[in-house]
Image (cartoon, rainbow, N blue to C red; front, top):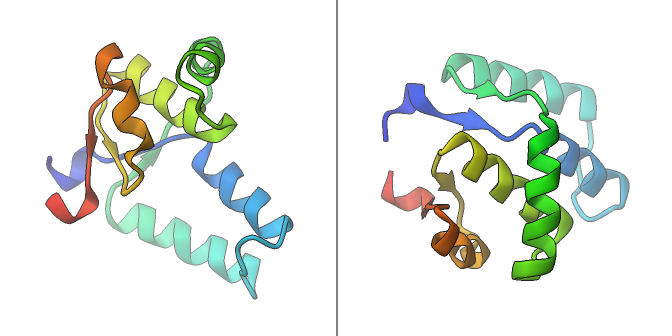
Length: 109
């Protein structure tokens, strides 16, 4: 996988924001975090995808069929619809292999 081919699920940033708001992730300076994250994404040519209605219909199916969390189902749906590999340590996405979702561990790239 080439670095310039990396895409970010449109739900990743929302998930981080909600985790921080819920106190599950401590971000002391959210403005600085967001600015640095944008710089990192830009510097590495990582593009954030836009939301699409079909992600949500696929995600609802994944939630019920594979017993995934809300965000795991959304990220999995993005991967399937876009025909892109998920880069994640989370083996939950391996459940989706039978519907064409492929996961790669970040240590392998």
